[in-house]
Image 1 (cartoon, rainbow, N blue to C red):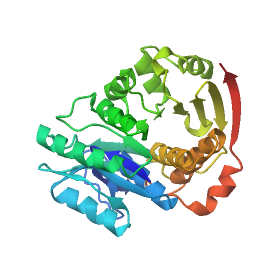
Image 2: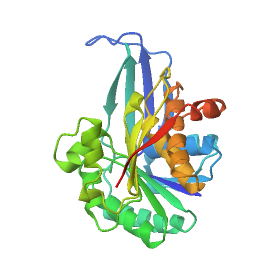
Image 3: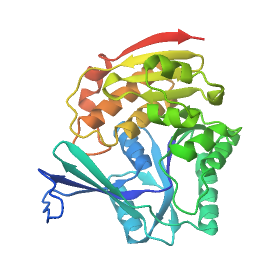
Image 4: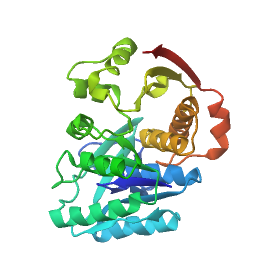
Length: 312
């Protein structure tokens, strides 16, 4: 089983508009509300792959109850810790081919609530072989908190797949307890290393930096250009076919779900990379965030090319 952690979940609200008119009333008829947050997108895709999965993290208030209800309606297992503050909303306005996001910071977590969650987390780790940790940390939680979760997972011999950014990512990979996988983009690689990384050659060199020692997988998504992946001592370029992207939101989370699925099921590194790319593309082809149409899986899988470009 796979455990997904979402420390700062949200109700994801999508407002599609033909045109966003500033300083005017914009009326929306086709509103979408989903149980959201990066980790819950991972959960949903794994569930659609028929992979045993359970979601956990922090939920509070009426919005937290709404998320629990939606997860129940989708038959997704969950075990969240209760907090006193209200879970947040995240709003995406889809207009004229653009996406404008309005994201609430979310609730502030106190020490007692965090300790209660950690006890839940330790218990849930006993049931799983992989844990994915996704997204931002809420207020009141120190930026190095994911290092604590990774350390406990390592202690219990559970693989950790981490998808976060900024200071939280930097602190997580500087600690002695390393995650098994990270999924930064080019900008996040640049931030972590403190130097601009723009070309494939520069990125390939960056992945060999000592800072990443001890991390088995580094997966850098390049959008329509596929991905650059470092697995152990090998670096691969993954090329993907052209697709008609309908809604790219959540594609990174879907990639992580595919990678978790591949690793959990003992797939080869090449197969695991392909599965991750397929689930990412299937999400982009779907109007709903964190949703895939499994009927097109095999067709896309056969079109992905994995080329080993460097062997240290």
